[in-house]
Image (cartoon, rainbow, N blue to C red; front, side, top):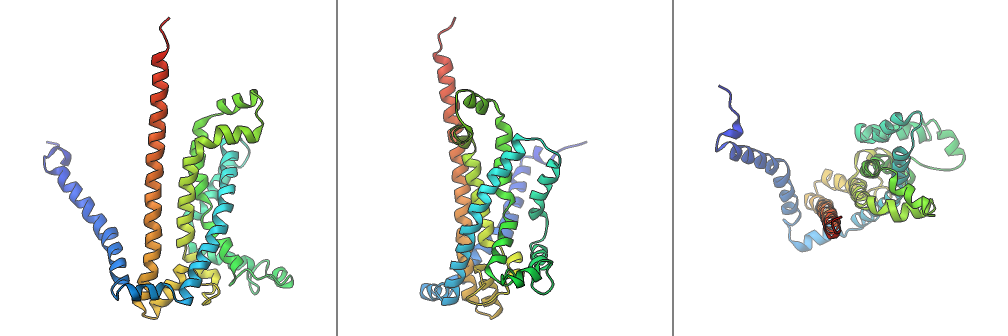
Length: 291
């Protein structure tokens, strides 16, 4: 005799308990522990830990890299999604696979890839860069390039499905009425993709701020030079400065929580927007007199 666990009255409570227990052990308790350890020495110790010169420089460098990489990948993501959604060309599938590579390749491998390309000693273009007195590895440019690489897919992957679902009818209608390409995009396309775009930007920003593996390989971890916040956390933790490590880690945790809240707000806003639009459309149909 076959039966399902869900058919047993207490089955769903067992499943819910197991799911919540797993989330508590793997997510909630570690997150709570970060803040507990961060404030274990009191608020003054916490503030002192996150305002040291090394921590301030790490925070500044993290924000600086994020402010450069996120806008670039936002523009690139919109253009790439537009091309993939609106045109068919040889190698389109290969391009989609290439855009997904940063999600599949280990960040450490990404860092090694850039070293093999741009290092002055073993890099493919190292001799040219050295002759031009341009330093990429163990310097800010390498950190920016690796951050750009690992954050490429997020905007593209959020905007592309929306563009594919839109079709071309509304854009063609706008162009028929005299709108140029820019006006068609800004007035017809952008309102449709804005929530997906913001969602992708939030994910891109979160990844850029918290990136560790690729940046750690190409940065050299030079204090007050190439140490981002995640690298600074590793450094102070290795020096057994536990409160400082957890205090700085709490900053990343706070940013992650804000990102989750932002994603949820955008999702609810998008749902409410679609619901209101549908309600207005139904109201207009109801107001049409019968023939």
